[in-house]
Length: 184
Ligand code: SF4
Ligand code: SF4
Image (cartoon, rainbow, N blue to C red; front, side, top):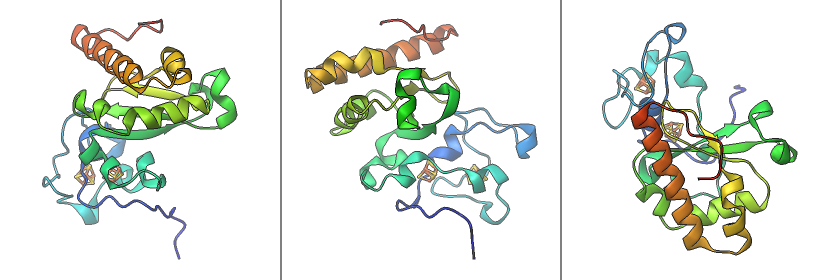
C-alpha cells in the first residue's frame, strides 16, 4: 500500500524537472535551476533506483491536470507548471486556494502555442492567480496585466501581453534585476 498521490498524467520520457529544479547540499546534490542533472540520460534518469529525495517528492502541476492533454507535458510544451499556495497568493485570488506558475523552459513559442492563452484566460476569469517565471528566477503574478484582454475575449492581445511580460523577464534576467511589479 502506498500513500503516494495518484496522478492522471504520466511523466513518460519527460526530463523537464531534471533541468528546471534547483538542488541544494541538503538534497544531496548542488545544482542551479536551468542546469541539467548529472544523472540525466536525455530521456530519463540514469540513477533511478538511487535518485534524490527531491526527485521522489516532486510532481509538476500538469500531472494532476487531466484536462490538459499530452501536448502540455513540459518537455513537449516548453512550459512547466507549479502550484503556488498560501501567502504567495495575492489577496484577491486567495479564495481559489491555489495559483499556478508557468515556468517558461524554451522561448516565446511556448506562449504562442495554440491553447496556452486560452487556458490562461480561463484561470484569470476564475480569479486563479497566474504567475510567470523562468528557471531560477523570481516569479511574478500577472493577472492584473491580463484582465482587460480576458474581459474583451481578446486572445491575440492576451498572447502579445504574455510574450511582452516574458520578454521583460528575459531582460531582467540579462540585467540581473527582479521584474518590477507594475504595469509593463
Ligand atoms: S516536469 Fe512534470 S511531467 Fe516532466 S518529469 Fe517532471 S514531474 Fe514528470
Ligand atoms: S536524479 Fe534522476 S530524476 Fe533526479 S533530477 Fe537527476 S536525472 Fe532527474
